[in-house]
Every structure is written in structure tokens, then in C-alpha cells.
Image (cartoon, rainbow, N blue to C red; front, side):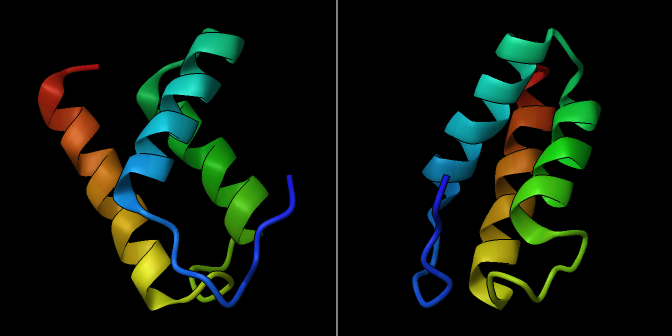
Length: 68
């Protein structure tokens, strides 16, 4: 997947991505978060910018609150 580093990814994008990882890998939300952080951010929260990282964090917290 090619991601434009100049664009800000939405919270909805990260929700969909985390759900896809959980579904395809049959893993927990926490593991999906780790995989996403490694794959999209290369383990550096600055890789895609502060806004995208904040939205990633908000998506994770939202899913966590939903219990998914």
C-alpha cells in the first residue's frame, strides 16, 4: 500500500485498517495496533506526521472503548 506522506490519514481510515488487520490475522486490537504502527509508521510516530498519528491513536482508543 502506497501512502502519500503529505496527506493526513483520517480516523476512519485507521479504524478500517485496524479492523482489517484483526480480521485477516485473527488477532487482538493490541496486536493490530502494533502491526499497524510497525507497517505504516515504521515504528516512528513522526513518519506520517502528527495529525495522522493523533488520528491513529484516536481510532485505537475508540475501538478499545467499543470493546472490539
